[in-house]
Image 1 (cartoon, rainbow, N blue to C red):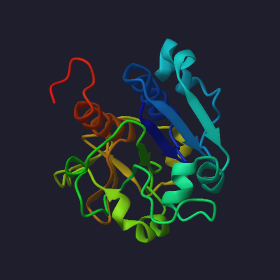
Image 2 (image 1 turned 90 degrees about the horizontal axis):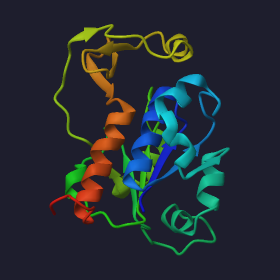
Image 3 (image 1 turned 180 degrees about the vertical axis):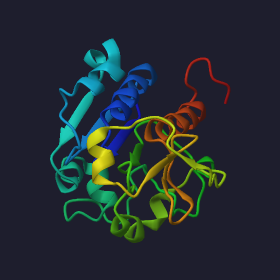
Amino acid sequence: MFNVVLVEPEIPANTGNIGRTCVLAGAKLHLVGPLGFELTDHALQRAGLAYWESLDVATYATWDEFVARHEDLRAAFGHPSGAAGHRGGVHLFTKRAARAYTASTYQKGDWLVFGKESSGLDAGLVEDHAELCERIPMLGDETLGNAGVWHERFRHQHPELRRDICGNFVDPRAGEIVSLNLSNAVAIVLYEALRQTGFPGMRV
């Protein structure tokens, strides 16, 4: 079983979609707060459909609580009670990484960690653990637009961002992709991890 981790997710429909993907892939979902929505949010439940009741999900109030509750993570992030220097099968996904996700080897039980939609993982976390970081290569799509409507609360919190034709969050001032749609990013990485570990019906 893989562990899919969403750190401070902001858009409930993304989390609902990811929950459904986790059920179908046999993965466990970890939600690290603060969350940008309530777990009772209608958009979350609608996206998860009937799958949400079958989801193996754990929630944590903060990143520190999340790390403290798992031995693998305490080791990987230098927690005093962890084994020093142990990577613990942790993969941090960020556009700032040098290594592509396809260059990594995945094993069952690995932690696939994704940041929030607006800004990704904390910059300090990425800088301190660059060896754990991986990216999903993307073409630089600078076609800006407002293709669709996203969660109203998120839109008001980040008025500087727009959506491009692929649904990516774009800063018009920079003309670059801020983040791949979160549910798409999780599906891309999880598919590769499952392929490498011999998921039924997939060719290795």
